[in-house]
Length: 113
Image (cartoon, rainbow, N blue to C red; front, side):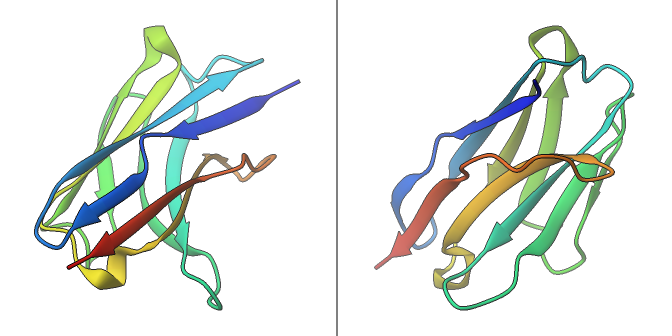
């Protein structure tokens, strides 16, 4: 059974940084494109970015100047580094495979002043 466990969220001040982690179990991610999504309260889940098996990232245009995605295939883990955080970055962050499979619980990021 494939499981995705996101972690690293919490409360951060505007302008701060945070790194999220997604650990995958039950399958190898070596040959999988992996992606991050986020969902703000009352809004639809949106695409944050993805990363190819070889480590090439592709970030949403409005986030690429502040966010970065990386991966460690040996650890079956992907990361989302978020810098210069804004109120609008608040939300529940999820990772998933591409194409999308089972969703994890997500990790909450709250940006405040």
